[in-house]
Image (tube, rainbow over all chains, first blue to last red; front, side, top):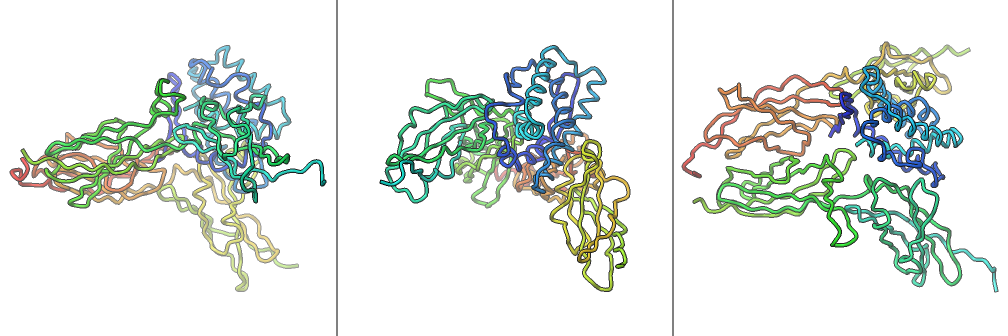
Length: 152
Length: 213
Length: 204
């Protein structure tokens, strides 16, 4: 079924086509993860899992991560495979749609950033910048299910 | 006496097979090898630096290894790897793809129990439990793992040959106003929208409504 | 020098029930077979990926003048679409859809519905309109419109059970399709009424 998800962050409510994004990712997961040979580092989960983030910081971290994927990640994930590129486009455009809604929550002060989320996001950026941009982007895309699992 | 160093073909089709988060590593023997091949297994948590050997799966001749205990934290993702050896020859380590217990497991159908009165049928649905290390360990229902879990229930009237469907997130369903002395068969399926996971339908449980009082 | 192949004209979108098709007028060239290729550009590509275009492989060098773009229009954002003609090595300019296309403008029709009374049970059979669809089914006992009830049907497998009916009473049903991803519904279907099994003495 459609499997839209209403993400609740206090007063901030964001509707997101989770099933469509999951279906797009599932279709390319093996292909994308096979391009990431580095088993010993995770962009999103190192050193601590997203699951350790306080509930009060969830909205801010989610907003930062959607900005991160839209601004930094997707554009460096172009492949030689047209089908994979089309699925990445589908995910990227869905993320853009959700990123906007999270941005509106932020403008209405419903998505406040605490110390913890700021630190966590800094760590994610440090993990990302620790690799060359294509490897970092492909690894981040391969970890999309870590983000989606955590969001759900 | 031939080369000192001689490699064995690799194990094939190395993958996790998971049902209700009982996560078992499976593989096929290297091509063209009969009996006598032995294997060893290691696994790693994605994002963590080291490979960990599985002692219970060292020098084994079977082609599976239960890693449920090692992969029970479904907030993590995993890799596993297998190496074959025979008469001093050995293969490369062959890895699985990245395994995500939450999305890559299969779900068993729910347990279904039915009872009837003269005009109604009551159905109790129970979601399977997540794999656990021992019977003493506290049970975790998959309902706790997948909060959006729903049941699709099929009710088949054996007299009219008609099938009705119900969808519910409750674990009980009562269907009133049925025909007395009529046989009905019930089967049910688990449906999870995200991640996209559906069980098959359970086998059919048939029961007759009682004689009209 | 060979004349430039004209770009396809009259490029438009046909979008019904979340199925989207790009169509255009054929380019003619002395009876030779002209082929066409289609590309799309989502808002992400426009804003964040230097306006890049993505080819749709199923509509690459096709002879038809229609392309099913449903699978690629899979986010609720504004998309650009373009098509060009090809004849041998010759290529036309791109013909681009005038304005953007957003799937939230798709036209939604009510579901084909069949209402069934089976004994005391009110059931409905609904057309499978695709994974994006759910259905709001409203039903009421005839004459008691104010006590109308609603059920959201997400799984369209077959005959869906709505409710039980009082003996001999007439019940009416109507349904609308709903797409969560764009938060829009169709109009309601025609109302259909059925009567519950009659003779109470047979069972009571």
